[in-house]
Length: 252
Image (cartoon, rainbow, N blue to C red; front, side):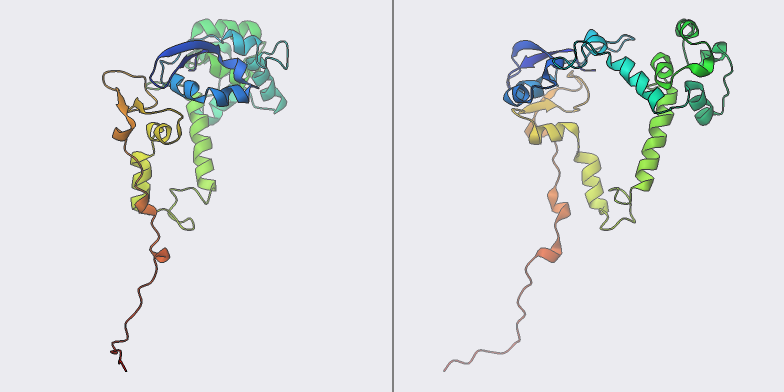
């Protein structure tokens, strides 16, 4: 999770100052001017995960546009406007488990949150999808709720299956070769991307999504594997060699 207040660093990793992240919403010029510092800040330790919503998200969603805005409440209301089914209906759809009362939620939601939901909703089928997932337990071995994992996996599966141009499909027009796919799968990493396009990035953690540690140290960009674009070389574009007719040139 990104901190509400960004710690700005120079290209050498020296701390400069703090800046409220929300204040960048409509200040594109400021971001462009300080892109190097913003980029470097992404390497700093991330925010810890807890069950609260930051003050900025709950009160200052769009500074300079609205005096106050609760982003989470707005997202909850969008679900109602779009006509999303109740939380328990999604559970039944993906797991086959039919929940008819609040007590039966205990498999998916901690008891202390069930008490709160029971106080806020008259019927278990009134629970909004987002509200239910915000309260849900993390799945075993994962960092997201079980129901959210079902929804994401289902959406991802359908998106890939329905996209005839998806780069891993063998039957798509001009599909990538095995050599090309190997390059993508092994070397198309966040660290490689940041080294290629990140402003002022000369060193980066080997694993870009994980925090810096002894097992994941900062290394020079020269140590990060890069795509070998020769895998995409098109032999058809090479100039054809002139064929010799085997005749000798006669000099006069």
